[in-house]
Amino acid sequence: MTGHVPIPEELSRARYELEVFLLGGGFDLYEDGRFLSAVERGRCSAEPSYGKLILSCRGEGWARSWRIISCEITSEGARLQCSKQIGRVRSVVFMSREKTIAPGSGLRSEFATELVRLIEANFQGARVERARAGRDDRPRLHGRYTRVVIEEGGKTFAGLGVSGLEAQPTIDGALGAGLVWLKSLSGGKRLAKRTVRGLKLFAPRGRAGTLAARLMLVDAGAAPVSLYEVDDERGTVSPVSPFDQGDLADKMKSPRRRATWPREDDISPAMASRLRSIVELAPEVIESRKRGAWVELSINGLSFARASAKGERIDFGIETMRTLREPDRPELHRLVLDVAAHRRADATDKRHYLYRAHAERWLEAVLRKDVSVVDPGLDPRFAYSQVPTYRGELRTYIDLLGATQKGRLVVMELKVAEDAEAPLQGLDYWMRVEWHRLRGDFTRRGYFKGKPLSDEPPLLYLVAPLFRFHKTTGLVAKAISNRVPVYRVGINTDWRSGIRALLVERLN
Image (cartoon, rainbow, N blue to C red; front, side, top):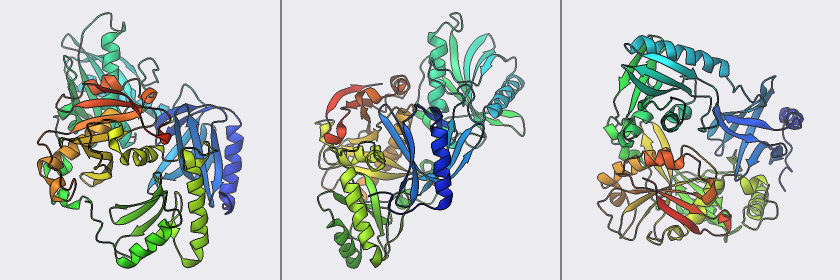
């Protein structure tokens, strides 16, 4: 039934231009300057859905989708302005067929040259032996990072820098990439058996907060990690000590009061009645859950409607929503039937956008029904999804928060495709949960009712299909302090039909 609403003329032209581009073969896929994957011919499409143009790309074990807002075809490739997460997040998707030059690589080369100059000017007696900004597939390093080898005081150091022109997630990923670069130099033949004494990370001034926080709980062993901020305007390189900031430093007004806690009793009776009428369209599959100031209705993790908990407004749609009016009820009904038909494990068209979209939210929905399937030691009564966490004004959501039978908290980071950042993203969430746990927030705010919580720090579970863990997961997780017990939980590839834990192992 998708596509019965015509898409605007300008998006029709964009669809045509994209189809012509896609006929040219495979390409490298980037989002906000971050390399995602190489995409083979025939594994990407731009299709209309409810008046929107949806870009869908897939590979072996992964799939991603965006709503296209605008499209520009250049000599470099296709650049798309897109939205995702029901229109909450904007991003730039870039498709490039240039295999040796990434988008903005000229700027990255300039940054590499400037970084060498700044290091040699700010570290007395230091000499940069080599610098590279290109992609290196052997240690799985992307060209967005400049890798250097530094000779200082008769010692050799690995260095890794990232430009201030990069997106914040790329800057935050410098620690994981640096650990991989360090291992590559320490374990290979590149330095003729010289010992690498440490890793130096170089981040833009004012944007190293996440790196500084992560370094509180990351230990590279015999090769310590040091962090520096680069000020291009002043030409300085300044050391940054590991520290946490934002809400952990209590610089804001009681951030724990700003967190969204489980309160289902503040929905008006009138709104509850309207929501029930929607749930009754497919009561066996629709789930109603409170999230912040909204109540979301979803089918296997795909949200199709939301209601203001304190108002009278209901929005509906996929990717982009509009306010529900009485004449829209038949369209809402068709949407529910369409999502229900495609959002099921035995769907006939597994390439359909509604089947592949937001796969991690689907995994979350399946796992939330019984978290003990990944570990019998977990209490199946408790599984809180999309728990909000804060750093300063930035709010993120933990995939799943549970507890063992003995009351020890468990933070779960869920992935359905390879993601090098999974261990350190999980560490970020672990730190937020530990901060709230130490202050007794979970019990006081209504989590885990009737269950005493342990006075031990949380466990961290990295959950993904067994063969979908990134090659560097073990290396990065091993560097996380043993104060944070990190476990890899490998599940079956066909998890939509039911989750089975195939492997549970401690990584650090």
